[in-house]
Image: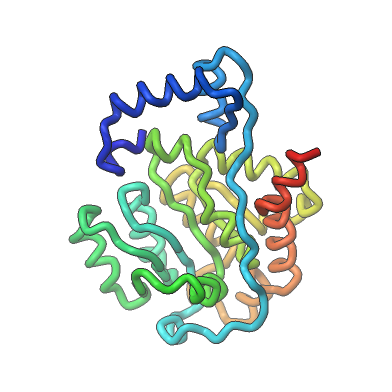
Length: 259
């Protein structure tokens, strides 16, 4: 499904996939869609071992200068900016009046004109690729992280790590309703943080749904700073986000599967 994005032969990859799944002694999958697909190919159940995250360091971080003059709340997208991302959702976030922080390399083949126009808006900041040790400062500077993926075969079979990265930094998240995101939300409902699930993570199926979810998590654009802090940046909520993400670190996943 990602052959075109990676500039590889889809036909050859399908052949390699089938051979590998059938011949391997052990097969696991990182998303519900791959679990179903490979169980069918293998003729036996394939277990799900989803992506894990690495806890980001916590503590007071200086606000990046590029963010200082952005009105609150700030919505952030961190990662590669390419055809996996919905430009429609990004434009809707900006149209709704939210500040938008974009962090990561932009694929010049993906919506070059629309992306340039978006990045030029007064409440949008595009900082491009940044050093790894600066990522936490940018994630900590946002109020809500978004995973606005398009409905494509590649995305449907993925397990977006950026959603967990937002949560491990103490920030709530809104994601496209991918199968893996629905699985993660179901796990949240079973966790100790279930009482605050609707303040930690929400799913949306289109641009309108994203804006409604942002209103629930971050309030309206232009909201006064105290109301904003009460809604989404309170220390208790940040701790709850981190606690849920801690269920999905690689260390936690390894411990569960070693039992």
